[in-house]
Length: 309
Ligand code: BDR
Ligand code: CA
Image (cartoon, rainbow, N blue to C red; front, top):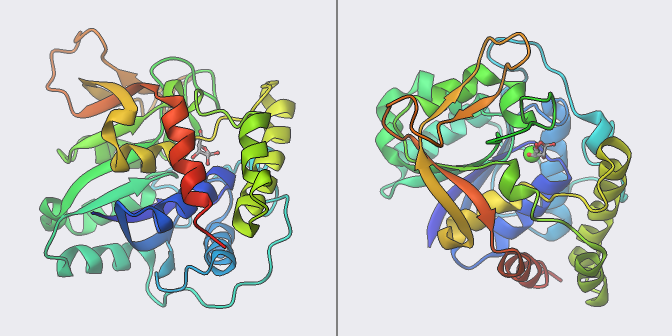
């Protein structure tokens, strides 16, 4: 069983990642920490709390983290996730409260007190994790690995060059990629294969279970956003891929390579420079996903969502 902390910015696909992490038997979810990204951190924290309440996930602390990127100002993704960060289905008010600690303090505490190393799963910008590394570099050895959704080998989705999570806080991403911690990077090349096609949404609906139907509602909103903004016929459900890669690393084909983060470029800030052909002559620092076993992925996600009432 993998002990993980999910650091996220829910976010429709983050919410599905959370539900997958909280109920998959191969994972012990220690905490949900939230960061500014898709929306302001007040909102992403509240969304995480609401999703946990709705799904009966009451035994796990949910903490609010960094409210802006290390250096640049925040620019949220309301075009994709709406003004709340989780627009679409009505979600009741949460029935428990946020952890009193800041997310960064909570992560530091959990790392310091855990006997086993912990895997960090990041599905938002890397500001919380970079801040942990800056404040507590001695705890690096307690981080078994970082599995993150972010970046792209090729084109971006927020600028032509950059994917949202890395673009939002490139300096934080740079800290993380320079840390020496084993990294699995799940870029857009992988997540654009995890499409919530109508048959996937139908499988969730058919169960008539509450959380499966709630997930279908989230995916319908997400589908409409991706149609409007990108003209996609079905939305890529990015974030659960980073959880799936911890549960079953071989659900993703990947390659070890050097990844550098462009922090300054006029047109390319936030780009993940993936050295596919070893041009830089630098030691690899990440396993970069290149493709996904799509049917296995959806079976894993749907089977887990169906374990909720
Ligand atoms: C990433 O950006 C966010 O909009 C999604 O939640 C995902 O983490 C995709 O680029
Ligand atoms: Ca996200």
